[in-house]
Image 1 (cartoon, rainbow, N blue to C red):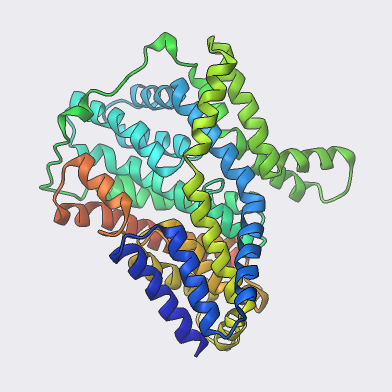
Image 2: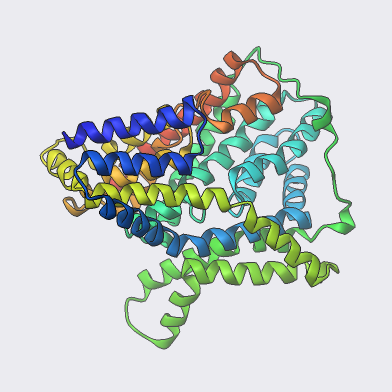
Length: 438
C-alpha cells in the first residue's frame, strides 16, 4: 500500500505540473499533504514534516545557490563568459570549433545555471556558425551537451548539490567523480553525436544573429576570466585531494579544509569576482551590488522547488514510506545505482524538470544508502544521469532548444532528446565503471 501511495503521489505531481501547469513548489506541497494523509499521519504532523523538510534542505543550499547565482551574474555581466568563448574559438580554429565550444560550455556552465548559460552562449554560437559557414547543429549541440552535463552532474548546481546534502555525500568527491564521468559523456553526446546528424538545417530567428557583444577593452583578460569562473571548483577539489594525501591533523590542514568547504569556497569566489570582474574594470561597488541583488532574486523559485522536494522527502521518511521501500528493495538483486538511475529516469519522463526528477528520486531511494555500502557520491551522479534522460515536450530545455534553433518537434526529438539521452546513458556507464574502483 505505501508503494502505491508513492506512485499515485508522483502521478499527481505529474498531472499538476504537466496537465494543469501548476507551479512546481505548490504541486510538491499538495503531494506532501496527499501522501501524508493516505499514510495516516496526523494533520499537525504533516505540517511539521513539511516545515522540517524545507528547513533542513534550505539551511545548506541557500548559501551555496545564493553565492553561485552571484558568481554567475558577475561572470556574465563582466563579459568574462564572452571572453572565454571568443578566445577559445579563435585559438582552436574552424577545424576544431566543436572542442572550443565544449570547453567554453564547461567552464561557463560550472558557475551558471543552465538557462543563463544557454542564453549567454547561444548568440555567440550563432555568430560563429554564420561566419564559419558550418551547420548550426554541428556547432551548437556540443556546447549544449557540455552545459547539460554541468547542470546534471556537478555542484554547485541545484540538484547535485541538494542530493549530495540528502545523502551526506562529500561535495569535493562528487565534483571530482562528476568531472571524470562528465568528460566522456560530453564527448560522446556532443562532438561525436553531432557529426552523425544529417539533413537538419537549423535556421535561427534573425534577432539571435545580433547579440550584444562587448568590445575587447570592455572585457577582463582570458586568464582572470577562467580563473574566476573556475575558482570554486579549484578550491573544493584541491581541498578534497589534500585531505586524501595528508590524512593527519594540523592547523594548516584545518585551514585548507575550511577554504574548501563549498560555502566558504563560493563566498571567496564571489569576493574575488567582485574585484577581478568588477572593481578592477572600473565598475562602481553600487553597480556591482545591484547586479548581485538581481541575481539572487532570479533563484527564488529554484529554491522553493528544491525546498518542496525536501518537504516530500521528509514526508516519505516520517510517514514510514521510506522504510517500507527500503525493506522492499533490500533483497533486490538490482544495483542501487541502476535502481536510482531508473527511478530518476521515470520521473524525468513524467515531470520534465531535471531538478524535480533528481530530488524526487533521491527522496525515494534514500533508504538504500543505509542498507548498502555503495558510494553516496556515485548515487548522486547516478540520479543526476537519470534526471537528464529522454527530455521531451514537458521539459523547458526542450522548448528553449527548439525555439532558438527554429526546429520542428520531430527535429528537436532527433537532436536534443537523443543528445540528453546519450548523456544519461553514458553517465550511468561511467558511474558503474567508477564503482568497480571506488
